[in-house]
Each structure stands twice: as C-alpha cells, then as structure tokens.
Image 1: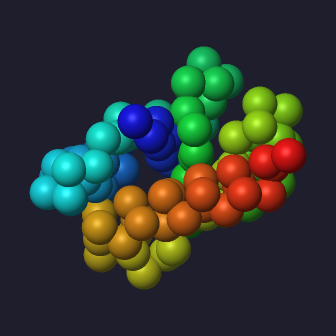
Image 2: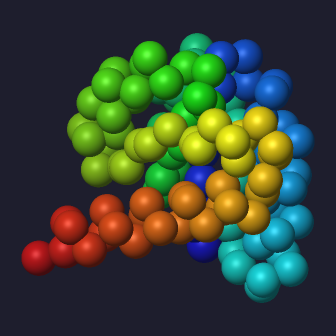
Length: 109
C-alpha cells in the first residue's frame, strides 16, 4: 500500500482530488491511502506518508516541504497545476507513484 499525502493551504481544496485519486486507484486495483491536510498539519502527517505532493498554490513552500521530507526520507513535489486545476485524479496518482518509484531507485543501496 502506498501512503500519499496531499498538502494544500487550507486542506479542503484537495478533497475532491483525493476522491478522484481513490476512485482511479480502486479501478486499477492499486492499494493506496490518500489524504489531504493543510500546511498547519504537515508536521503531524508527513511521517505517515510514503510520498507527498503539494498544491500549486503553495509552491513557494516547496523548499521547506522538501527539507522536511528529506529528514524523513519522503519525496515531496508540486502537483502539476493543470492536473490540479482540472482535478485529474488519475494523472496526480500516476505522478505520486512515479515520484515514489524514482525516490526508491535513487535511495536503494
């Protein structure tokens, strides 16, 4: 199971995206736990994730979020703004999976 954390400014704008990602994962029989939190809740949630994606509206916080992720060995990236705006759950799920796999390949001894 892949644990995917979505981070946005208020934690609410990504709820529909989470639903669409979960639906696509179920259609593909891919086990994933996907949840969204506000930036205020990152410190309580990041350690539970395998990968984290942040909303494009807070891309200015990417450096800080990546730093937090590096301390926990969790990759962090910005959700593609078009996919976010279109609420494209399948593409965002694929983005999370690719980021996770790339991170694992780079950190496997």
